[in-house]
Length: 565
Image: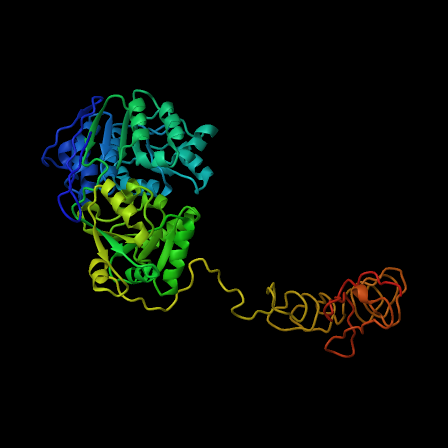
């Protein structure tokens, strides 16, 4: 059993000990080596140095020697502590020993992650060091083209980073085979358990060679994950920098007590702060969108990130957040895993997390790699007991502070300021297609005079008429006729058969009245209800065509069969 002891009023430094009979506890030692001392390839060490990474983090220092030695490793460390390189560097070191390319459809190593964002983060983190050795790292996640992934797998992949669902699709269709896997790593195993992926994870691990090396890293270790460890990591070495508790000394935790009716005002002032990046967490997709819309209505550049967005939308939103164009990101708990953005110095719990694990993963977006960060929970009076219980389970002793819009305490903790109040365009608002007048094409509910595409010159009637305005008829080319009239000239209208008639379109062989009335709907039943035929703008020509029963318009061309009176 492990225990944690709080040492400060804001955040605590837990002391953990491992006493599991099934594992070998690794001794804790002071930093005594660099990456070069671990036997990593020189190209990888040089690439790390170019990224200003020269000294391993605590979890890397403990796990790397055993992982490079080929042992099964169980690592427990908080989000942002460097777990990706703790399992990624041993994978690259082992694969660098190969001199041939991997076979088609048979990757040599596998990294399983719960979310798309985390998969892309792992690929982005490992790519510079893999490229230095000529190794290929590929993501396989949902929301991206399946056939493109199939083609990449055919060309051979060294490191496959996949989500359980998409990998299961490849396995079912035979586009990926796991019998050549030498080393497997599971990242954020606890979230995969929370999301219900353990059956898929078990099936995947069962397809990998039993004598392959396996590593499992997670911020927390619950019963379901422990059962996975007992089944697939029977002989392993455990390394832990904490035991499911907050252990980052540079992270400050606050519970901000607000009165009812003031929560949105407090949020808007926090979102309007200057400098740094802010990430706010809500429980639901609708909650994310609602918070985002309210912030943007007050002039705050905020965007939402959740599973309801398409993958390309999520990628663009995250990219704008990374480059600073969007200083405020509103996300769900699912998106919390895998958001690796430098410079996030404030995390806001808009809605209380479901459990202490979600609290830790939300908080792990800040204070990464030794940076300072602040975590605040916006709490209504009826939520105080729940939030304090969650922070206690997470090993956090947060400071409770009563705040209100414009208060000094709110400003000192978060840097809050009054928003501009100038609304921004709603994130999901479509472009206004009726913002400028158009002459042709579909125009929604805007009335038109007549005709279809007419170019930039208004014309009286008919369809496409070329560049010369004419009085009536369909396409007329350069000949001064109103429509196709066969060999006999006629006054107007379209094709009229072999019988000359005064006007109108095709009228068949049935006689028409001399007044040349075309089809008029239900109104042409008697002389008293008969509507006069509409004329074009030139009085010397009449135009036949369909007359709507609701509008007095002239549509040249087909007149339809006339009704007898």
